[in-house]
Image (cartoon, rainbow over all chains, first blue to last red; front, side, top):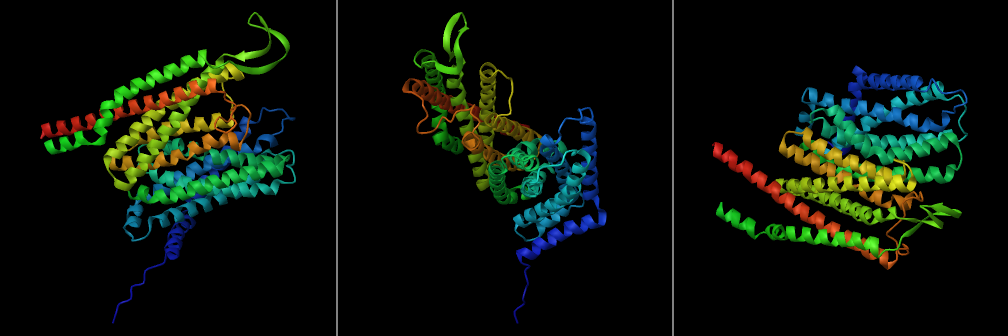
Length: 236
Length: 255
């Protein structure tokens, strides 16, 4: 009688790895509290930075940029943490011993980073509007959801690759920022322009679609590249 | 040992090394010729239109001729060469990941060093152009921004290399990062087409408006810059190879 060895499908592996990250988060609430607190503190710093502007000063014009600055800095914090605790108990070494396609690790890790980022954004964006938007935004404001989603996908994808690199280096926190911010820049630029045009109004159709195409294209290229290169990075 | 040395001498690399100083010299002559022709052959370019007639530099003129436009004959060839150098670094990054041989990592590193030098030269000449033509020290114009990002990425490459101790791991990370860096090159190249800002002209197009007297110095300087980059690359690579051999010999002497 032949022994049947059931190998788990890629989808099952992905779900297990993602479940591990989420379960860890539900138990410790480490990432969400630290990222949420950090985002709130950046907003407080904005409060001081913008406190001396005159009443006629319209923050709406620069709200897209300010919003993305919070998101970028918060994501840096989260990405740094996401692999630090994999290292602590040799968890990453354990994962590498499992006979699975390494890109599954990338997809699972990028998804968990994406989910944490989305949760933090769900808190940050309304808070930002509550604190800083004295004038009501244009009617097209719900359109900011798409650039937020596209931008977060890119941040999670590129960030997962880079944080895997930097977790094994000296001075990892600084190095992640040094590599991450230039690499994310084209995406950031496009997302800021789409968000701003949606909030302020104006020639929404042309600028918005153009910026989204740029951001989406960059996402596709970068995610595919990270996905291909991840195998080399994580096994090095 | 002797067989290894013989094989090394017979390899194509050795022949390249022998011609490297010659190519460097040819590059120097060609690019110098290009710059001289840029001042003698190429006609000055009309600058911003002057409203009516105005007194500029003790002369009544109806339009201003741009002398600082001559920077263009240096700026663009160097910029294209820096793109090529980053492309070569990415190519050797791919080769390293395919074979895991240390020699490709060394080639990638040397190509990135060349890219760093050329990127800094582009930023310096671009900065002069900005100051004298646009009247500002810095502006967040799309081409400028993407090139600035490219410079930061090349800096990041070396910071990354310095932060990893294990040679194998350092080589892998550096290769991956150089491949990812290369993504910014087409973006930087295409950005004037994607986001027209009106300050950086699109040079490579069928109706670029470059007359032959401008095209000749430009192409000479560009070809010269390619030769210089190649010559410096080969010499630097030879230097790095000798360093590695010296280290190996020292280690054996210790034993």
